[in-house]
Image 1 (tube, one colour):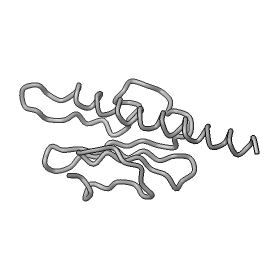
Image 2: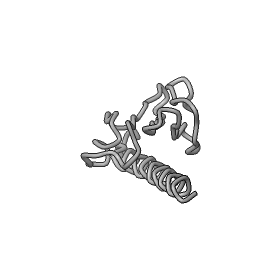
Image 3: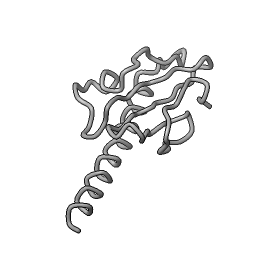
Image 4: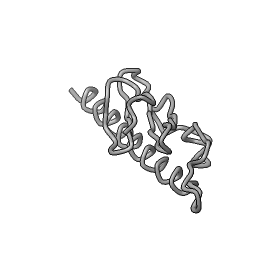
Length: 105
C-alpha cells in the first residue's frame, strides 16, 4: 500500500516541476522578445532559453514552437511517454499528445 502512494506522490511532484519549467520557459521567451519590434527569439530548446543544462526530473524533452504570427507555444514530454504539458499561446494544459505549430492560438 505504501509503494503506490509513494509512486503517485513522485509523479505528482514531477508533473508540478514540469509545469513550473514551462512557466519559466514562457518568462524566458518573453524576456528575450525584442522590445522595439516585438519579435521573438530563436531558441527552440527550453533549457537553452532559460540558460539551464538539465531538464527537471521526469522530463524527456521540452521544445519551443514558433508560429507564423509572431506567436509561440511550448510542448514538454514526460518520461512516461504518455503525458505532455503544452502551452498553446493561451494556457498550460496536461495532454496526451505533443503540441504542434498548427495547434498554436
